[in-house]
Image (cartoon, rainbow, N blue to C red; front, side, top):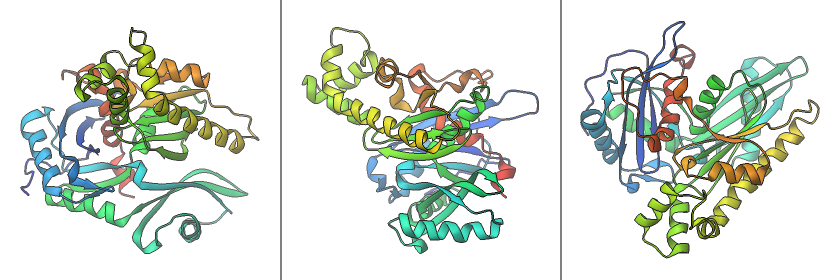
Length: 356
């Protein structure tokens, strides 16, 4: 692999490596001014580069990175340090409550919890946590764990490109950072649904992430279901999904029928998360107020309206581009904008906090 030699050692940029694509975003932040994108770009790579979350052919993704920076970059990314997403489906997260204790004791408690609930030996995991609330009678936190094999494969790729990894975090954490930034005036709890290509992540968000889960369906599965159900080619199915989706059209009922099992997976998982929150927040009486969809699969026409009807809740796409300024840069095509949310969430990582 070659080396990306045109970075300066400045704050960081965000990188989202998906199933077959990657997105990079750099954001400048100045006091009293909205965040401003200085550069962004995307690239595609062969799915065989990643197996079970592990980057097994880093040279394939490295080639896509070079193509992005040399051919398809819009604006400029000139930082060398990087905050990188990890697939939420390959991480383990679990809410915990521990007695009041100092930080040096929390990790011991986390290790005990991880041993009980995570089906991977501790010495094969990286463990971390985020404190979600703290009171005299105890501490509530979110435990996050990921296989060392997965993280180390990302490290190998980034270091070969002479990039300095500052943060690795689940994709849903990057999405929640955007939610926290643009929904700060709305203190009501919400469900975040990040619809990827082959898996989708669902999280309960109440000022911070409380719990996450993953379902095995995404945009590619919906395309395949349309192709099978309507007996059309995959390319025709992709066009139908992107152009009509499940909004009103002469094919609406046939498309809904074809993808009904996928839609039920989403609604069942969201209902499960809502029940969890109802039990968790029984004392406070708080209720889920909305569902926020994110990710490339979330832009299918009619999806939010369908989910809203089934869930009896407002459902809308996460749209940070009114808050994050593209300045003089041209915006990505509307159909591609949702795909940049995770990379933008990574780009908003506070580099000072990240190094603590």
